[in-house]
Image (cartoon, rainbow, N blue to C red; front, side, top):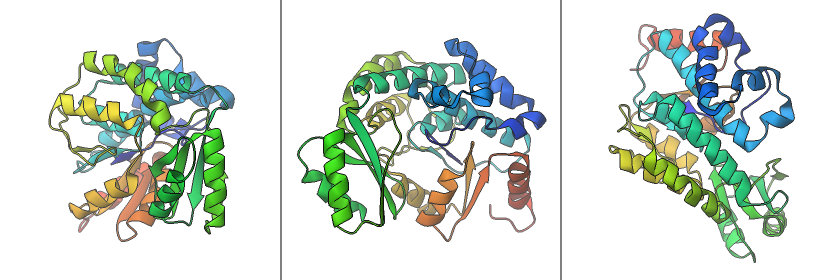
Length: 310
């Protein structure tokens, strides 16, 4: 089971699931109470501009991932062998693994989003997705640029995201185009995530992580910062601290789970971004997205049918 992060949100997401499963809206109410914001209203009616604000997006996407997981659990599916989340999605994975309660996780990601936005003034940082160029080559290009820019997301063998100071990202983008990238797209983000410029945000979040009531996960959670699987609460804290200013190693995370025998990946939350990436990373595996009633029930039926993979 994998949980999406920032970028999968949209106004009206999970409306279909909410009509069948009371736990969808209840989960958002639980998260809302933790931080004093009406997250369900924002998720269902927007406006889009507010939904895209990092400090708002992060708690909403956390609740969306957890709510979908709870609806999934109500349908009596097989228990997952592993959990993982893309960046912010790791918090939803940890709630599903009972390492964090939802209220604590919501407060943490709300603060996380606020600190990440405050770390770099708007306009001074940027991110870009590079398609069709080897990730190692992209890292080399970034290393040759003056200023802060580095790989932020290893999303798939075909897609790598870079992050850093605006001028440095612009220079790396031109080098990537000259090196033969098929497509380069500047991302509409308000801050340069998962690079060294985010270290102040990590430092600000650290005391909150130290004080948070975190437990050892009851299901294995693959941390995308270093591919570790925590067995202690302090390991979880360390991974969540390090991930803010470090790249998301999603390709390796999916491959690690496949190497451990995983044959089916299920994306819990709105959208199909991780499902699409998974098909590119491990095309021999089966990949499903549970973002509405039909996809959820259809996936449960597939996994519980006679002869389905264990």
